[in-house]
Length: 292
Image (cartoon, rainbow, N blue to C red; front, side, top):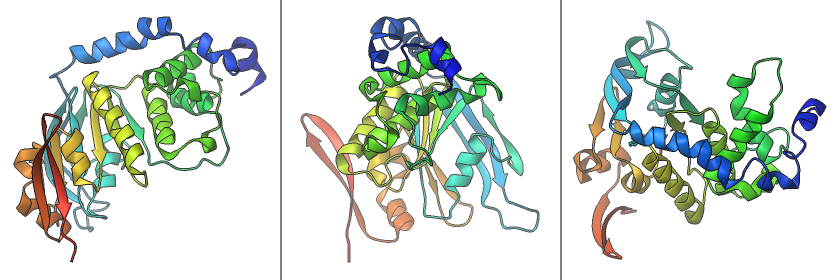
């Protein structure tokens, strides 16, 4: 960071970060207040799509047509569908990068976007990667200050990765990198997160790490929208399921309503078995593909 930041923040970009702004006392005063606020919103509709349609021009085919759904605080919506069906388009509409050609999307609060894990052009420290999430608050010709680093430190602490603050991003595992991107989204104090295939290319352990994190954030009152190609992930974390079918057809509802054997077979084009079993006293479900 620049000299000005170093002067303003003498302890932030050094190893003492865990003893300074990332203390549990600060976490309790600021971030936990936001968590309490999120819990208070539980049940309130934060995202509502009303008969949304999108196409690139009046002569193009509709990518999305007559889409309607709503998501309340603390709920997780998993979006399933084949490649090219419109999952990424839907995410762009939700975060305002594109506008519907018809209908409207109402968001009662800020949504933050979490991309798939990638390698940046420059090898930033984790704390600096997270501070980038404050860009909308900092201003075009300003530099991050004490408040921005405080929020970044609290986001890392909230996700249990405060010890990674001084590591470089390239040194991290895939799961750790995804957590850093989630922390970067959290520093803008959103009401919801929009994630593009957050478990893509991760091994089972790191998939579990990310899914547990998303469930925890939802329990704190955040709305979560995530695209995925893994029906088991949808079953594990989602309250609401949006299945994008061929053409402009879609299904929206609870997992038990829309993730039926027939719908999954139609979605993936092969035989699947939806199994129910008991593990440690808890009834769980899993989707098993039958490969030919």
